Amino acid sequence: MSSKREAHVMRVQCLADARRLAKRAADIYRVDVFSHAQLAPFVKARYLVMYALRQRGYSTLAIAHAFTMNHTSVLHAERRVRERGLQGEAAALDDRQMRQAA
Image (cartoon, rainbow, N blue to C red; front, side, top):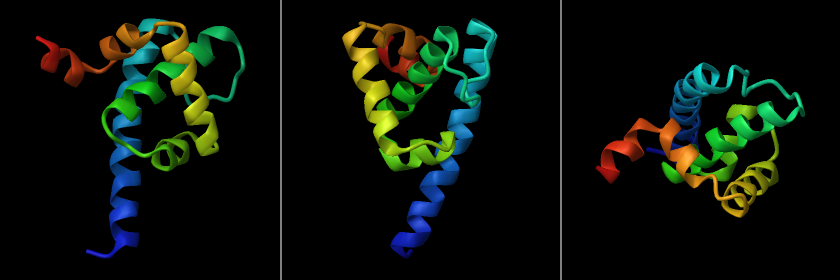
């Protein structure tokens, strides 16, 4: 498989996972993580989803593509989640991580 093809497949898989996590975040936080709103509840939920995707092994570029943002926004989200000690909340969004921890 060509590297272009692999990158495309990763972006598609990342987007599918992002949508699943966004649905869980919407159920918990009552926000749309794909909106570009800068209100605190939106930003927190978006950061948590980005962090959970990063923990799944997706690249910053694939995650940024899913959110139509720059890869540095993903790096910033990852840093903020760690600084604020929200890794547990991000893991709670991601049922895969919860199953692995058990």
